[in-house]
Image 1 (tube, rainbow, N blue to C red):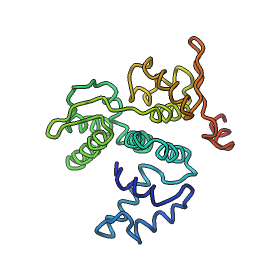
Image 2 (cartoon, one colour):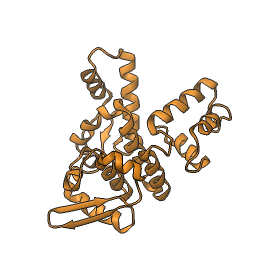
Image 3 (cartoon, one colour):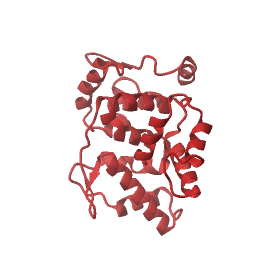
Image 4 (cartoon, helix red, strand yellow):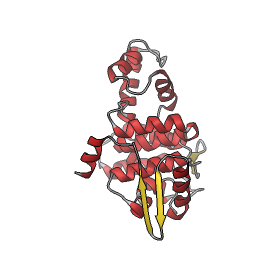
Length: 235
């Protein structure tokens, strides 16, 4: 997920900076300290693909806001945003949700998912490379540990992560209890009942507004979307 590079980039640029400035800083001024011009170009492309790097994209804008507010949530926030933007990484999402702490997740399992998604579409070398990158992303986010054999573990979840998960779910049309049963929330914890107190805690800390009356749950995100974005979402 290139979290080190992402952290350096966000530290060097304020909110609202134009993408052309970011591109120049990476490719021309080499602020990420890459050894060749080709590696600088690839780094820029990968970071844009994974994260957008443009405050006009609401997911990136909110991601940056939460990144600054909750340093302990950063690895998971990066994974959450990357999952929204990277279709290959997202192929592995159901596997992470279905497995339990202690289960083995190996490269061959990820390669099988890639093959099932696009039969014959990837060379053996590409499948191996993609699978290694996917496993590396899950490891960086705290879902896997181990070297030769990787085991599923339960990552540390910050209230900022549940806020971001609920926001992503809202953008996909999930409201109320349905949002807590979306894949974005299941990724954090498959037991929705454990997520309600975290949402309340996120509300208490000002990340969102959470209201519950019996079985009726309302989650809102004051100031997170522009008027135009709200119109597009509701239209």
